[in-house]
Amino acid sequence: MQHDTRLPVIAIPMGDPNGIGPEIVIKALADPQVFAWCRPLVVGDAYCLGKTLAALDLPLYLHTINTVADARFQPGFIDLLDLSHEGLENLQIGTVQDLAGQCAMDYIERTVALAASGEATAIATTPINKESLRAAGVPHIGHTEILASLTGTDDPLTLFETNGLRVFFLSRHVSLRQACDLVTRDKVAKMIRRCCASLQQLGVLDKELAVAGLNPHSGEHGLFGDEELTAVGPAVADCQAEGLPVVGPVSADSVFHMTRIGRFSGVLSLYHDQGHIATKTLDFERTISLTLGLPFLRTSVDHGTALDIAGQGIASAVSMLEAIRLAAKYAPLYRPLT
Image 1 (cartoon, helix red, strand yellow):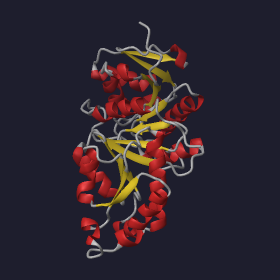
Image 2 (cartoon, helix red, strand yellow; image 1 turned 135 degrees about the vertical axis):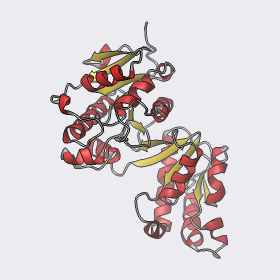
Image 3 (cartoon, rainbow, N blue to C red; image 1 turned 30 degrees about the vertical axis):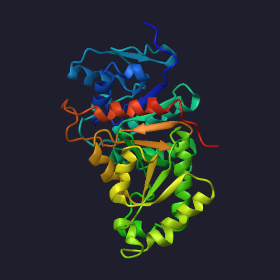
Image 4 (cartoon, one colour; image 1 turned 180 degrees about the horizontal axis):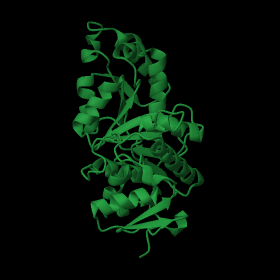
């Protein structure tokens, strides 16, 4: 059977081999609809994936290949670029190990090389473990930092999407007190520009970007805080004057719902949990992280390696499926920023 060459090639690094990455990849590719979205290609080790496949007892054939041209891209087959690491028999599922961290890093490097060469259209990543990476001497704490280093990208942008709700973040892993201090006119304006450019990259800037308010009811004209008056509102006005399609501040208790029903193209949330709570409450398993600003599109599951359940065959592949689907959806539209 010939595969549809018009479909994007989505490269999938297997993730930490001691975690649930191999399991959710296999379960996702057992779903025939994946092959209607894209041509999926796994980067990993046949030893690990084969053991997992045998334990899951799914009707799939592991098809190891040396080049993308050798792939079959057909339901019932898992096309795998096998990196053939040595010492894999020493891996202990569900534990932190330096070998697992090194394998995960090597999978990412090969996947990035495929995307950089144009052999893959986009990548959809599985979980990696920060402790295993550190044990392997990898000088990065996560996927975003690794991808930025490998591609020479300065400060990639994270977008969450679930069920049509798209959410950006002004700040991420800082205290709430620090997050409030980071809400400045200049920082908000710069982020608005980046968000609009990113939505344009994905071909979805068809409506305005909404900027969430920081305080209850967006401060009620200064009654509950003045950040909306001194920072958010002026930043929005600055960007409107530049011709950008943005509005705000819009009260955080309604802006996510309004975006979900199609009023806005996306939301700029002003701190980590403001946006995370909205997306994950709407649909935890289908909240997918997109990394923008890279030379290629990257999507990712928004969960960890789950070492506590690894190897038990009970991990859900819903998030992996959704990550592959969104990679396939946006890959043909994605245009790197110049």
